[in-house]
Structure formats: structure tokens, C-alpha cells
Image 1: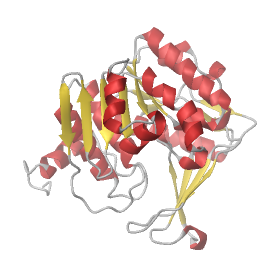
Image 2: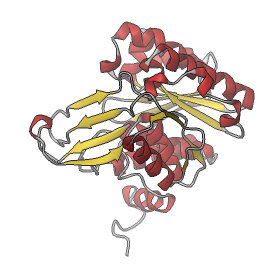
Image 3: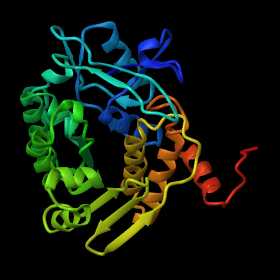
Image 4: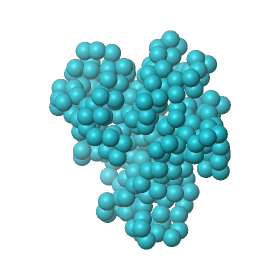
Length: 308
């Protein structure tokens, strides 16, 4: 979606000045991974309008492959308006009903689009947009299996898209389709009807090999058949908390793609999230690999916090 972000500290209904950016759970993760040096491709739909052109241009500028992104001649690009308050609730308004993204369908997902991929990352947001988008998500998972790619899934529950029952019906089954699950403890409880730890144990009895539980205190726990590891958040001043989950996913998945052990992958996820929440948009704080290494060294006390 195109993001219009109100000037900091001003309520949305009073805002006059807006900054344009790009937002979206999957595109945020793709951008984060691309900046960290990975080959990343985004699959989705935008409208044949200036907003769609801006979205594709900014993704390309960050090194994200959009060769398989579709342009819908009949529907507009999704729009997101929000304000930015570090110390009070943020007002987020979505305009995506009838958008190009909501019209995503199975025929828009080709086998060529996932050829060569090692990891296919999905969120619960896309299948909640429409029945055809849900079917497209199922198609993507089928193609990922055929291509030998692992699937990672972040529910990314957004209550404005539907009630608890609809989320459980649509996104709940996707938990069991992923080798790697990254989910908030409340999301696991909502989608499974069990405690987060009970849900993780059940998922590990199925297809999942790792379940990362994001806690309410902003810590994270990775659970596998071999053990569990905890990662506290790095204490930083928060300018805007939106985008922290996607940033964590990008940082953590980068570590896993590079074959790092769970504690280091968790630390990198927490590091990237800590950098993003200090900036206004979902993507401003996403670092390069070198930036991540400098920040992580500073967070852990291994280096001076000032890079000279």
C-alpha cells in the first residue's frame, strides 16, 4: 500500500502535512531482507495509478524484485493513513476494500515466481483481504512446496480486517502449513484457542520446525524440538512502534537464511526491530548488514555506540 504518514504528534483528523512512504507486512519484510543483502521478491498487486507506480519504484530502489508484481487496470492501489505518536495510541486507517491487492487471485501466482526461492514468507493479512486472495495464498504455499522452499508465516492479526472467528477460520490453518512460525502470544491464543506455549508444542508436532513467540513485553522466545531460547528487547527510545514486528521478522529470517544459531538470529531480529521503532515509517530504520552489525555491537556492549 501507499502510506501517508501525518506529521509527528498531530492527531490524524488535525493533520495537514503528510509524508508519503510504502507499507505492507510482506513488502516490509522483503525490503528489510533486501537491505540486509538477500535476494528478495515481492508478489502482489497494485493499481495502474501514481500510487502503484510509487510503490513499485520504491521497492525497486531498495533492491526488491517486483518482476512478478501485477498491475490491475480496474482497481486502485491500497492506501494507508496513520498518525505518529510515541506516547499515545496511533490511529491507523486502511483503504483497501476493492483495492488491487484485494483482487489478488490464484491465477496471478505462477510457478516461475517462486522458482529458486529458499524461503516464502506470508502473513495472515493477505488471505483476510478476500476469498480470492486467500485462494492465492493457498496456491503460493502449494508452489513453494513444489519448489522445495520453506514457508514462514506471521499472522499479523489486524482486527479491522475481521473478527476473531474469521481470523481463526482463515489464518488459523496457515499456522500448520509453515515450517517457521513467527507469532505474537496473543495471536497464537486467538488462532488456536490454546496458550502460546501449548500452541507452539502442538505446531512442533506437525510441520513446524521453529516457532518464535513474540511476547507482550517485546521479548521473543524461539522454540524447537531441541530447546528454547529467549531474547529480551534492546532498550531504545521509541519514536513510532508500527513496523516493529515486520522488522523483527526480517532480522530473524536473515539470520536463519545465513545458517546462524537461534540465539544469534533472535538477537538480530531484536536489533533490527529496535532500529525501526526509533524512526517514523515502517522502513526508514531498516538497516544494511553493516548497520545491523554496528548496532548489535553497540547494544551488546561490544563496541562504542558512536561509529567514528
